[in-house]
Amino acid sequence: MFIFIECWKARPEWLSLTHDERSEYLNHLSSGINELAKTGAEIVTWSLNDTDTPHRIDYDYFAIWRFPTKELVVQFEQIIEQSGWYNYFEQVNLRGKESDPPTIIKHTIHNI
Image (cartoon, rainbow, N blue to C red; front, side, top):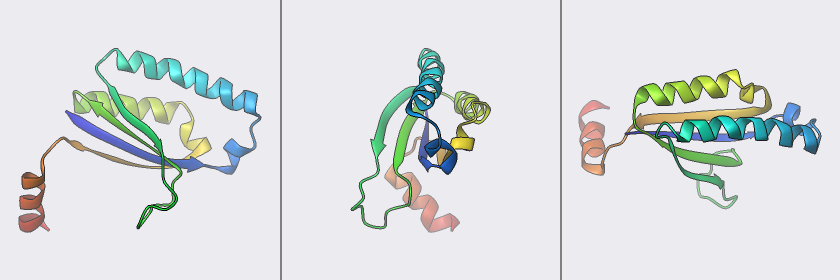
């Protein structure tokens, strides 16, 4: 399984849209997300980034996804790119194979 985390905030281009335009765009995107869910993609959470989080990154929203394969994550990334999402939102992403603390600790000790 692969985890994909995205953090985003609105660009001025998004803020300049009317509420109807925003709704129309997001409704269109929702249909693609629903199709993706049929392939095994799982939304773990979509959340607001708490403003009082210590060492907070400057993004308003985040989503955590779980995908059965890296190929499906890459397909999702392409869908987001092609949708024009990055025209409206500044975003950073994280992607990686699911792991556990001992594996990551070992990697941190030996590979950094």
